[in-house]
Structures are given as structure tokens and as C-alpha cells.
Length: 188
Image (cartoon, rainbow, N blue to C red; front, side):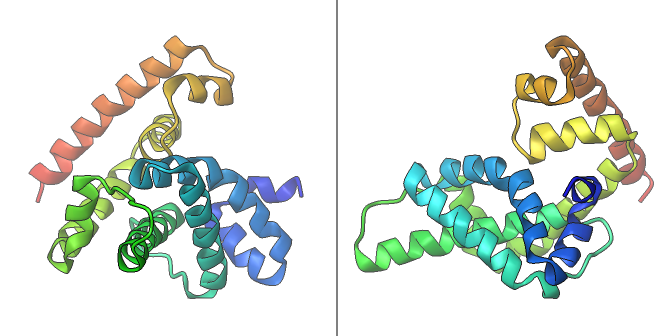
């Protein structure tokens, strides 16, 4: 299974359709970040674990439906499934009068209507486009920090670098992203 760790998320998802055991690599890549995100929404570890497990099940069952789109990645698709699963879980709890689940106000606002969906998609596409135009080492650190939710120290440990080096890369990546944004938005 060493080779599978070198594949992209999309390649792993496609391969898992023929070899289900490969899906475990995707689970190991995203499980911790999904748990952090679900817990930040639901504020309950046990419920978050249930939601994350359900999310991976939905991702696997819908793997054949995943259609890559320019500027959008597997992770944005997977996170959308996670957030929708959190919302559905919250709605079910409200209906059956179960224990309270508190969603962040921002999350409720984002999930409340379809009118924000096109704007959200536009922003997501712009962010993905900007990230894809950054050098790989800068893009990676922003992805790990802001999308996957890792702290700078965790990134330093994963990358085998000092905390100072990671902080510098995050700073440089933000600066480069601002410049790209100014060029891309200014050029429209």
C-alpha cells in the first residue's frame, strides 16, 4: 500500500471503486481534520465521530458520482459532504428533541439558504485557482493550515521543519496569495 500514499485524493477515490481497501488511505488523510471541523460545528466529540464516520460512508458510496471541476478539488467536495452531514445531524436532533447541538452562527448562516451557494462556489473556485498558481511548497502549507486545519507546530512536525520555518512559509504564502489575488481580481 506504499504506492497508494503517493496518489492524489482523486486518484485514490477512483482506485477505491475497484479496490475498496485503498479508501483507507483517504480516511487516514482526512480523518483528523474532519473530526476537528465536525467538533467545531457540533461541539460534541461523540457526535462528531458519528458524523465523520457517516461522511466517509457517503463519500465512498458516492465515489462514482464525483466529477472533478476546474478550480475545485476532492477536498472541497468532501468538506461539503461533511458540513451537510453535520447540518442534517443537527436537524434530526432538533426534530426528535434529542440533546442540544449548537451550530455556530456563521455555519447556520452559510447553510440557511441557496442564495449564498453561487457566491460561495465563486469564492471557493477563486481560492482554489489562486492556490493552484502558488509554488507547491507555499500552496501546501496554506492547504494544511487553513483548509485542513493543522496548527503551525503540527505542520512543522509533519514536514520535519522548525516552527519558525513553517511560520515564515505561512507568511510568505499569504503575501504571495495577496499578490495573486490583486492581479487576478484587478485583471477582471
